[in-house]
Image (cartoon, rainbow over all chains, first blue to last red; front, side):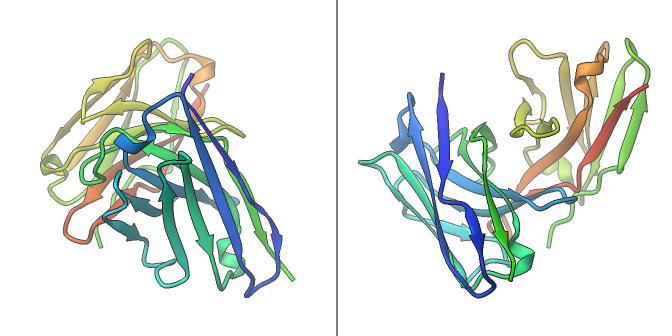
Length: 122
Length: 106
C-alpha cells in the first residue's frame, strides 16, 4: 500500500521550533506535489503549506507564512516542515498528504499520513 | 480570501440518502474535492475532480454555480464522520477547506 509516515511532533514551549518529517513509500515521490494540513483540537482541517514535485514552487497559509518552511528531498523520498516561532494556536495534529498531480493548482489530496501531534504549551 | 461554507451538521436515517452542500462564489468554475475524517483517523478522499467517485465508495459529487454537493447513498452507521470540501484558490495560490460538516446517522 502507498504510505506516508510522519514524525517529529512533540511538546514545545511557545517561541520554540520543531522539524516535522514525512517519509513516502511505494509511489514515485518525485512525480507528485505534497502538502501539510493540520487539525487543531475542536477545529476543522486547515491547510498549512504545499510544495510542487520539483520543489520549484512553495505555498503557505497566511497564518504560518514567515514562520514555517516546507521542503523536500526527492532522493530520500521525504517531505519536511520546519516550524519556528511556535504559538499555542499552532497546537494540532499535522498531516502530510500527497497530491493527485505534480502541481498543486486544482489538485486534491489522495493519500494522507496518520499525523503527528504538535503541542505548544508553557 | 475565498470562503467555502458548509452546514455544521447533517443527520440522516440508515439506508437513506445524505446530501452535504459546499457554497462558494462561482465554485462551479473550480475543481472540488471531498474528504471524510472519522474520529481518530486520517482524512480520506471520497470524491475527486467534482464528481469522480473513488473506487468502492457510495459517494458522488456535483458542482455548479455557487454550490457543490456531496451525496452519500444508502447511508450506514459507519459513514458517521466529518466531511470537508476543498478547492484551490488560484487568485492567491492557496488550498481552501470548508469548515466541515458532521454527519450523524440516526
